[in-house]
Amino acid sequence: MLVSTKLTSIFNLLHPMKEDSVKGNLNILGTASVGRLLWQYSLPTVVGLLVMSLYNVVDRIFIGRGVGAEAISGLAITFPVMNLTTALGVLVGAGATARISIFLGRKELDRASMVLGNAFVLLLINAIIYISFFGIYIDPILRAFGASDITLPYARDFILWMLPGLLMTNLAFGFNNIMRASGYPRRAMMTMILGALINLALAPLFIFTFGLGIKGAAIASDIAMTCSMIFVMAHFLRRDVTLHFTPGTYRLKWKIVIGIISIGAAPALVNAASCFINVIINKSLLKYGGDTAIGAAGIFSTYTSLIVMIIIGICQGMQAIIGYNYGAGRLDRLKRTFWLATAVTTGICTAGSLIGLCFPSLIAKAFTSDRYLVDVTVDCLTHALLAFAVVGFQIVSTTFFQSIGSVGKSIFLSLARQVIFLIPLLMTLPGKFGLTGVWLSFPGSDLLATVVTAAMIYFEFKRINSKLIR
Image (tube, helix red, strand yellow):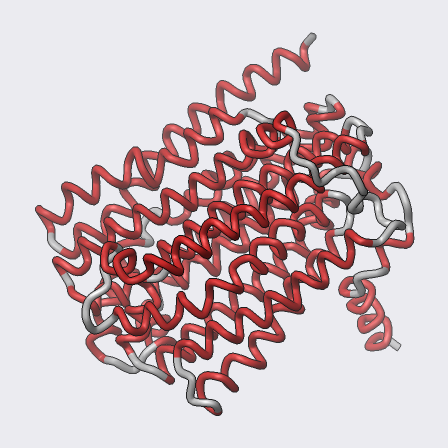
């Protein structure tokens, strides 16, 4: 009986249609306990993103063990390209999600529908631009990003086969966030789990059985993301959901477009900045450690992205709650949600940091059997993760400002860690400490950005407190 009850509970959590049977489920965003809401909205997101991250990790393990250490380094070279295309997707997806949350909080469903239609058109336009650009200039771009004669073929094979799927990825992720914000967090989770499971099934088949190597991993991802995209778009074609596609909403309106882009600019700049930071990092790594050091950075990035995805999942759940309550004028609930999310994410980042610092060789050996790459990766993890515990607070704070429409503050915090502090450190520390200086740049920028973030949050809540007193 106990087993049956547990299985029923798990089914209810995962079943995408269960929550859709109740209209008006958005009302709980302004009434239910913020702890319960953060759990309810974040858990499906975290599970979905974690599964997506795990399939990226497994993909890279397949590539490292099935193709070789050079392929891991070649894959790391493609990260800036992926960051740029993701930035264009996030520019629209995150901006539209925040605007829709605020409009739903104000009970302005017509304006939310207009944002939905405009977001779809903007994502299509963005895809045409970046697929054409990278398709034409991919070799010189990869060279500029740090590719050598050894890693260029691997990087080219991967990114050229990934380009068609990037449109599907941006549509799937962008509208998945909107689905969650409009009251369907469990269905949003199923979107990501669907893509992850398909990719996990296809990646080893294409890489090993069909012998396609690194391009096989890209093809598997393309198919998986196409399936996720179809799933999420089918949701918005239904008439019985809170928010759906409506005729007359696809014609771009500048006021709507500017509203989307202004809020989406902050997370988009994070991804765009990551691109240029990765280029600088790759150049420094190639100079002080060669292709192997780039591969080590790729493993470090893969490991930390697994943790950051959990943080982002919590923040996306938080965003729906904060955006709704900000629109509804419930500032007390807004504050409680922020501090709860901060406590949880800080604990997760601390645990991730300790695991990486205590067991670096186990993490490295999961991706490669190359002894030299393992040694360099251990050196990377034991230095770069020294201040990783504070990253959760930074991401939560950036998402908070984005959720309440404070565009300038959100953009500034997005750039603080990766541009304002990290670039100067990357320009100075490697010259004094060599490859170790590259690794130490990460905790240095984390600590400096945290000081600035704490000051901005202090003054923002001081302003909010004054409103509560009135």
